Image (tube, rainbow, N blue to C red; front, top):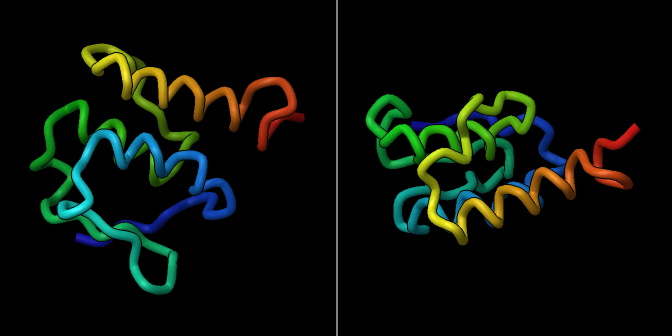
Length: 94
């Protein structure tokens, strides 16, 4: 299943979180760099996997409890990505 990557210019900041959550054999960026191809429909993923994939696709569509139940390395990578995107001096800081 392919899904459009929103805000492509900042995908490189979200990609490390996805890499920690799902093994590379389960997903890939399409050759044109516009979509992510995943080996299963989003509703076939675990809740945690789906939340991280959705974040990777669009950082503005983040689950309310996205940190709940994540391993420490994934939670740290997610916090880093949030800070790089929205923190002081971040990619989308105004």
